[in-house]
Image 1 (cartoon, rainbow, N blue to C red):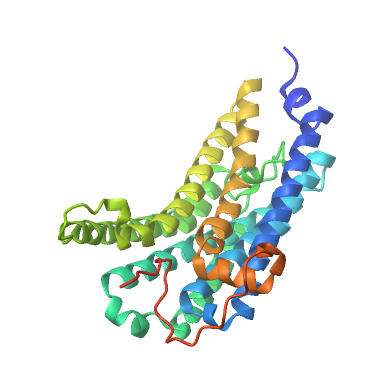
Image 2: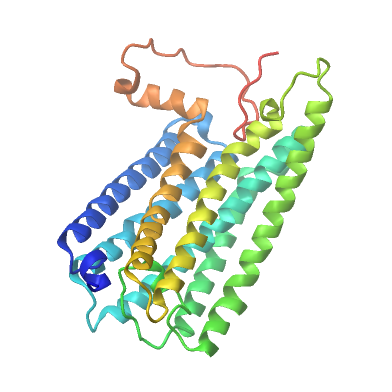
Amino acid sequence: MPDQHQIFGTENPVAKGFQIAYLVIIVALSVVCGLLVIYLVWKKEYLQKPCHYLRCNLAVDDILFTGLCVPIVIHNISQGYNSASFTLCRLEGAFTLGVLLSKTCTYLFMAMDVYYFVIHPLHYTDRVTTRRVVLAIIAARILTFAVALTSMAVGGSGNVQDVSDVLVCLPGMNSSPRNTVLAILIVVVPIAVLVVLAVGLLYYRVMKEARGQQDRDENRHLKLRETQAFKALAPHFTVVLVFVGTAIVSFIFARAAQAEGSGVYLSAARRVALLLHLSLSYITDSVVYSLKKADFRRAIREVLPFANSEAQPLAPRHDVPTVDSGLPEVQV
């Protein structure tokens, strides 16, 4: 049987070219969409709200990851492994871990934003303020920076064999058992577990409110997906599910492919899972959770006339700004 690196690795020019072209397109789309979200919030006053600042922070994480980490993966696919790759791999791994944890914290803040908007709508503007959101973002950045430095201090031993996979460069993936425990159990796992539990609890409360809205429907014809609470939660749940799902699948295949005697098809599955993780999550963040919103679409039409050349320009709105957290406007 042919060697797996000759078929799916850097030895095969077709496979290498496909992976590079795919990742280049993903980097371009992710960076463009993320910058568009940030630009629209900066340009339009009616988008300058705490919930949209969280979207900008998420866009920054996506831009940092795809704009800095993915090109390193492209370089490794193109050039292959060399003696200097481990130093680059450790730096990439620390930076990647910091960005992913920052993104995870942002998902938590967004879940809290949805929770307060649905459960405590009358107190939403008092509890979710720009100052609190900015402080939360700064605290998350400091935490992730400390985690990245810690991961560098307890990094691996240098037995990297294939640095084309970004997961190989994460701390503990190729390190001694002692360092693996320090890097993953002490630093990463507690944070991830706490975030997952907190987000799950917030989801439960929002879904409970969605059930309550369904029960309070006088005509008893309101479906769960038609409730305001569900519509507010659905975009957030979608992006979190894509992020967590692709990360878990990519991690499982990466670990399985490192096992001695792993076959050609397992190596191919690992690379496909990696490509999906490097693409789906970082595109859906900007498109599903931000650019699909009505106010963002309105801003796109105003800033980019070619986006709706046949439509008449919208007249400026002078009504009192309303609370917004991903929930569509309801006509009374």
